Length: 422
Image (cartoon, rainbow, N blue to C red; front, side, top):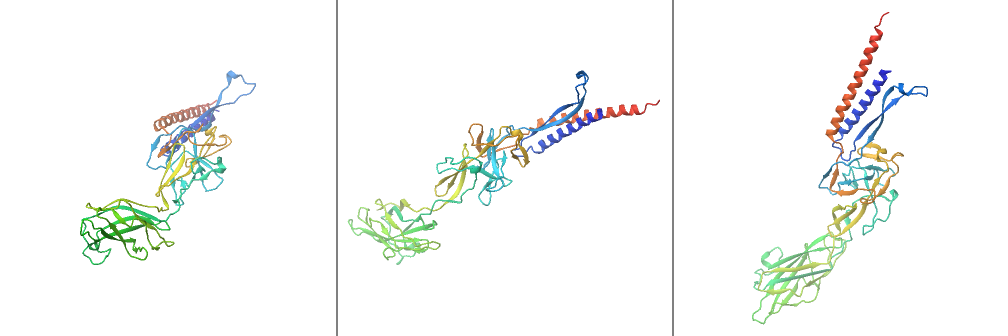
């Protein structure tokens, strides 16, 4: 009988050492939760046996119980690295729109080729749908959506109005070149550039070239400048003319044109439709004895916004920012908790599944009652303490040696009995 008692002790110690080895092997696994082997004694008894004479029959592994203590939190530069400080699990789905749901504490997420936010196993992070203000519009696992980052935002608005205010140097001389050539700097005095947008939202450069045409002969004379305009390589015309004349009085104030200059319709390479816009020189456009200077410029076009970044606040609200200044709420990170997390089934890769022992998942958001806080740019490491596990490993080894010694002693006793001669 003592053979089997010692054997149960050996098997139990071996199970404990296997559990400790598994913990140590995952000391660097993000989101990993260690386990602890728990034992129970085995007693064989009957109603007729005197309780004072009962002898135990060994031990048995009662459970390898998971320990869901908080792991160390490490900061990172990735805003999609998430950690729950407190209770809660991230909800992920292996397939977009699939029914299977897994839970994890490993918040190392990134964007895949389809712009979905996934973990290293390809699990899609689940979020609650929100409206434009960021308010949750639907709850429950059936309402969850896989977080996907949009590539663009907004609708392209072609430029229709351009404004500019500047000062032209009153001391500038008439260019020596007889005719204007934008590739010949000696044929114009100054140039200014403004970014405008075509019908598809593509950025184009509007360049205005300023050419001194006349200079005042007396103190009361006015002076004139010609303005040649190009969008890319396309020269603009106004009422068929290839240039516009600016007139300044003797005080340096602009007198003509004081209204918007209507450019004729034009089409640039890559544009989806013809375009037309007006150009307005501001009332503070001057001709003074000061260096050429553009004091103000503006236009009313708008490109399609390209995604530039994503942020997640402490409540789990995901917002994307775009190059055109737009911001868009994409969803709120869904968290799950369980009445008995130790009853979750381990799947590997820091994944768990709910069971009847764990109870059904209780869904919510970060900071709500029963859920921890969400931290962006942070990763939760394993909760394994190397020192503690090594001490436990030494103790488990001693237990194994003691049971082996008890087995050896029982063997020697048996051998002695076998050697008794009559």
